[in-house]
Length: 143
Image (cartoon, rainbow, N blue to C red; front, side):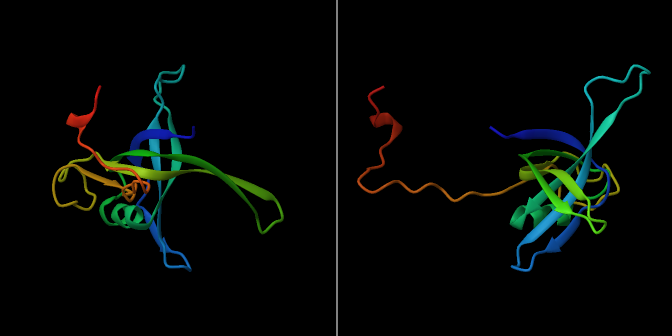
């Protein structure tokens, strides 16, 4: 199973692009505090790159801004590419399935989101029952 759950603040404003095929993709970085401070007592944060596609990406690009707190649920993906200098580069990203906006409207200098907390997520189409099966109410179940 590959599932990442992160809560952090945007380290910079999101970047929205459109692919050649017309799909929207939004990329942003969040700073996530580690659970315990370092030996010197300082709070240490890790920075993660988040990638949100299609409708989720459009929503994130529209309502998120640097400093806003978000919760991200997604999948960790690794990829590599050849740099211009000929070296191989590796990238680890979180591909978001759900992004929940945790900063209430008016609490930061980011763009307003129309009020209160917001939740943005990919909506998956409802599963279709296979042929030959009949839908029944829970009251009709024998257990």
